[in-house]
Image 1 (tube, one colour):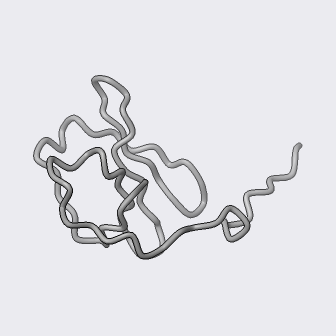
Image 2 (cartoon, rainbow, N blue to C red):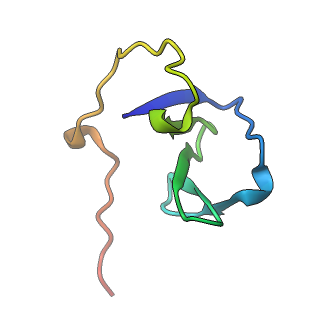
Length: 80
């Protein structure tokens, strides 16, 4: 489960984060020490999608949206 945190996000120890350009529409952040997934960020609008397990508290999150696989971006890449 993840939280859409919008584009205004900061991290306590950004020097430990590495970003991987994972697709045409998103990049993924991970810990350069243990490899844990920290976020994915949409390139178009800079929104961060962050797993709820990263947060110290429950944050009072409200479950209001579910993303279905049939609505994902087209990822078909022709083989060369």
